[in-house]
Image (tube, rainbow, N blue to C red; front, top):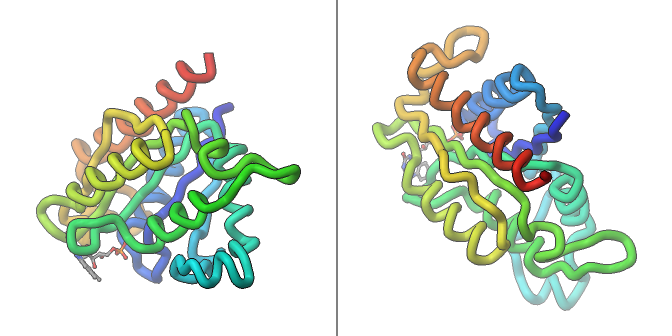
Length: 194
Ligand SMILES: Cc1cc2nc3c(=O)[nH]c(=O)nc-3n(C[C@H](O)[C@H](O)[C@H](O)COP(=O)(O)O)c2cc1C
């Protein structure tokens, strides 16, 4: 069973991205994946600062995220859009990863992310569904982390009206698009593994 690591870009109560991450996780399970939904907020990472890096050092909790990425066969990032960008929660966590170096404990930095398949979803109450944020995220993950970003992505627009009481996506077309995005990611992961 492929292991899918899901990273929501928001974990606030009532987060639309988190709701989409949960719905996507259930779909991935239905497609045969084992799913780990990871709480980036729980890492308590400070905003990147060189004085921290060269003072107290890279926060230990960065290693938890690296281990989760290394263990997973594919990563799915589900982000809201802040002023056209992915959230600082996502970018800051990856910026910290980029400062780590492979050691006896674990592969790190590019050794942890290079060649790892990653899929993208976004959610927003707006009409574009956070689409612009994914385009920046795609470039960032490819360029700086050498991740293999799945060509298929999906932006869930009007996300504040998208879910039913069970947290499922109401609109059949939107649901099929999320399922298709996951399917493409899992197919990519299987092809890279082979
Ligand atoms: C700082 C900030 C900037 C935002 N910028 C955008 C934006 O560029 N595009 C958009 O569609 N929504 C934008 N929004 C609205 C968010 O999409 C909305 O608050 C969403 O619910 C946040 O995601 P979450 O529910 O997963 O926490 C912004 C919200 C905040 C707080």
